[in-house]
Image 1 (cartoon, rainbow, N blue to C red):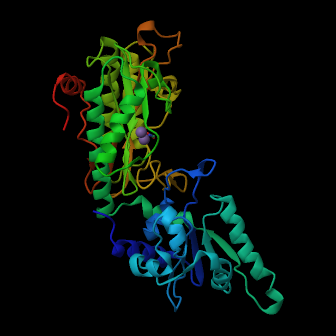
Image 2 (image 1 turned 90 degrees about the vertical axis):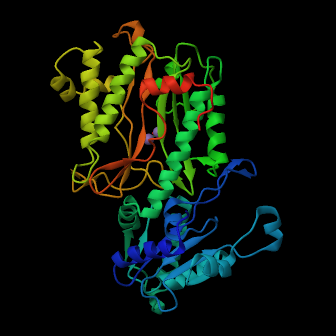
Image 3 (image 1 turned 180 degrees about the horizontal axis):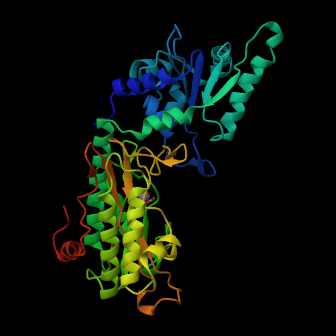
Length: 442
Ligand code: GLY
Ligand code: MN
Ligand code: MN
């Protein structure tokens, strides 16, 4: 199921093909990040670095030099160190980097100053993602400056810096068959986790307990970490878009909004479901829910090659505005309300985002100022919502504090799209039936 060595090699080749002559690309691994004093957050590799190498360790730098005789793909990494490995675990070392990860040439990271300076010298252009890591930016400049300092002895420093992201992120936007398989798997695991939470839920359960159910399902399926902080918001907490405190008790009569997706082999899933804590929607909850669902389905129906990126969003805005008028939450003509963005009081985010190695994945949404056209292999979320603030005195009390979002992951196919997260119910009747069932959701 994992990405093969051949695929990693193809990715590097594709990138090198668009690099200018006599150039070099530099991509650092993610740094380790302290959580408290001398303990660190679990390590997560940088997505760009992973995409090109599959190398899982910190303390590494990937270098691509198209046309270099002694090897185009150079990896700097931590040396083997039996004493350190007893504490921190196995290291591939330069030998393992070549043997197991396909590097043409590999060196200890401690030697990078000398060796990379040598590799940079005489190259005209450097592809590098400036501005992401201050510390590494400084290192890159130090390497270049050390060559500049020797110009009078004949050294030639690179003359131009180019944005690596421009090419690399365009490449990452279109998913391969293997990537789509991984993302589908991440979607399936995440769907099971949402069903598990629906089944477990009842009044009095704490939000963090639903989070625990979700994370249990992730980990038991081999996806140890969520792709982002899990959101479990009961009642009005569902109106806080990035609510991650997850610390309240769930109340009879409230909805609960869960936004959770696992990371499987570093690929993200991103699902939101909103359901009644006691298993039955109230009249107002159901009315709002059905409009959000209608908007979500209408937006998904617009995901196909040739439609532009913003088309699903536009449709979601129209349907939700119609719903807000039908329910009496907005007054006026739909066209005018869309035009003057009256819906934004209740629908203040966009319909979705690219999805991939990062939950908010890379890739431009516009090209030359125009919304980008959808192409097969792109994956996005479709996640409209309605949020009636608990203190909104312009609407009748019965609506206040209801927050609803429904989110699925959608891959663009040759003639339409494929929902990768379809295994978790979203019809209100199906959710009620699942929650009324006595067997754990499978
Ligand atoms: N979970 C983050 C998002 O839905 O965009
Ligand atoms: Mn989400
Ligand atoms: Mn999302």
